[in-house]
Amino acid sequence: MSSSRLGDPDKRDPDKHCGPDPSLAEILRGRGLRLTAQRQLVLEAVYGLGHATPDQVHAAVSRTAAGVNITTVYRTLELLEDLGLVTHTHLSHGSPTYHAVGEYQHVHLVCRVCDGVDEVSPSVLDGLVKGLESSRGFLVDVGHVALFGICRQCADQPASESENL
Amino acid sequence: MSSSRLGDPDKRDPDKHCGPDPSLAEILRGRGLRLTAQRQLVLEAVYGLGHATPDQVHAAVSRTAAGVNITTVYRTLELLEDLGLVTHTHLSHGSPTYHAVGEYQHVHLVCRVCDGVDEVSPSVLDGLVKGLESSRGFLVDVGHVALFGICRQCADQPASESENL
DNA sequence: ATACGTGCAAATTGTTTGCATCTAT
DNA sequence: ATAGATGCAAACAATTTGCACGTAT
Image (cartoon, chains in turn purple, orange, cyan, red):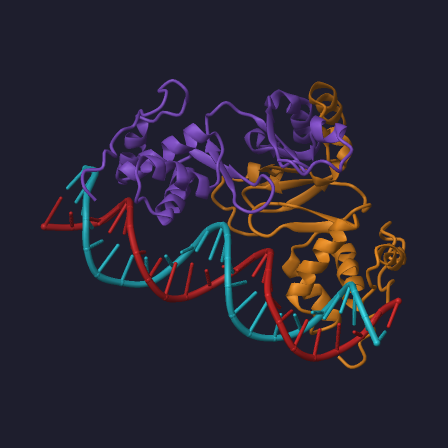
């Protein structure tokens, strides 16, 4: 509890993400909310991790500034989602996966066998999206698509030696 | 709640599901496992419900035969999944959703606003599936696709009066 | 008769809530 | 100075596990 060097927005590549970190303050201010070290850290963690569970975000944040409570991570993720800076999806079991909005969009390919998560361009969905929009009026949230199945490696293997991670 | 008519495989439309209920016994036997009332009930519940959480399955089973423990439902769902009779996906938050394998395939359209779940034919995915298979060698599990977005009704509305279910 | 299955309760794990304290503004 | 934010602990909810009893085979 000495002087924690928390107020450090650009610990990582500033141009690595399109998310406007500097504007976080403005967005918060606009709502009468406060800019805190924790909020910057959580947002940075989401940017840096690509996609991560609350627990993983907490771990990442803790690496930089120990003492940040998991409760705060939950609350902050919820807030950031409310602010439109991040969203979450459910890749496989358990905890939700958060990722930055505005981050380059990608579709998740989750392998049922090895649990690996791959990413592809959302353009693969173009046809599908148009089809559903015209036939059902359903607007697909391209940024949140997760497709489950079997990846090439696991499909090739005899399905028995998939014990290794 | 007197004599529980447990051993009753076709309480519902026998041709409503392609899942071979009668063969459950054989499948179990083949593995040295036992056919029990609970297992039949859980399987029937999944067939009847279309897709449901463990809790909903438990409720449905309890309606027919009170006293079946939620623990057993969990264990049985896991077993049935292992046997290849059911699978689960994650539609929105929380608990997983189980549904029968072999059931007519369908793609879920989950509305972020009203939380409604719609279904469409997997044929809408044909192009996508082929594309991913050739480009990535990824075999999409068509039966487990959930697409999130906004349904027609919610898209039309001014986004404020979406309070009604 | 015997091993598998079930129910019950306790243990885990993930997430939320209440409240006193702390701090950005 | 003051309302909002955080940390801590307790409350919750969902799922899993251990174990003695029950039952399909």
